[in-house]
Image (cartoon, rainbow, N blue to C red; front, side, top):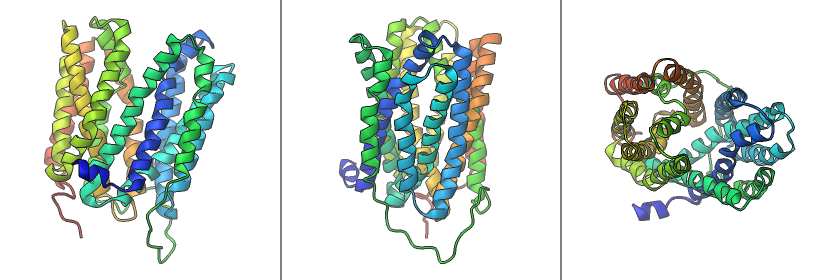
Length: 396
């Protein structure tokens, strides 16, 4: 497997490195955002919810827009570069914001940048390797991305322990932003066949395989139970995990995802995408149902979070490879756009439902709802999604 990883094209490694650096900056600032809003701008949790809700919704919409455009123009690099420029320039500007409205504008710009780059980047990765290498390619990318999610909070903790003011930490985000943009400019796109005639913009699912449309429905149902990870950390705190160990618990989860992301995704190239996704979703259902049980111990919490890290490692890259397998030639950007739109928009009702049940009824029923959504998605995946994947069904 190591020889296969090292033999992956330069573009794959470069995009992975870009994601590592960018996520280091993003995850360094993200945990500090609530603290900055509350301590500096005197805004509460409701304001934070409004900001993040609008930001993530805009990101999902722009992922579809950029996916359709890249299929039409056959150019991914400009949108990737623009996406990282918007994010890199926007984050440091937070220090000049004197109201939460400006924070909202900056977060909107940051998430718009993510939306513009995500689908073109995923489509470019699919075009840069053979079908038999898609699992390991997306796995490597997600592992490098998650490595940034480990490094970022550690950097934030280091700066805070040194007594660096919050505003100065946000300004330090200029450095990784400059590195990210410079690396993005070095991306080289693979040669593509020029279209014989101009194609029209298509925002619909027309022309997409029936199995892909069904997969979007199944993913939407699964995501309806996959609420914000903040609830998991809240549950861990209520179960008795000391406050100072919560960041370490999450960093350990991200580390597991980083280490196992590439090998588990590579396994899907031979074992099959659908089988890997099904097993991972079963682990998710187990995790959520047991997380909701009353009287759960701290040691059980740590063990369950380890399972959650494995779940993330086994799905983040494999699901993208599965989308690439089902996308018609020349339509990968649109396919990823719809996939990202469905998963992004479904997160809103997922978190709302989970939070309402958690607070109004009981945590157990909130976690049971999430586990039940996963079980329904698993059954639909088994009996409704007939196509396994490209590694099991030869493509001509």
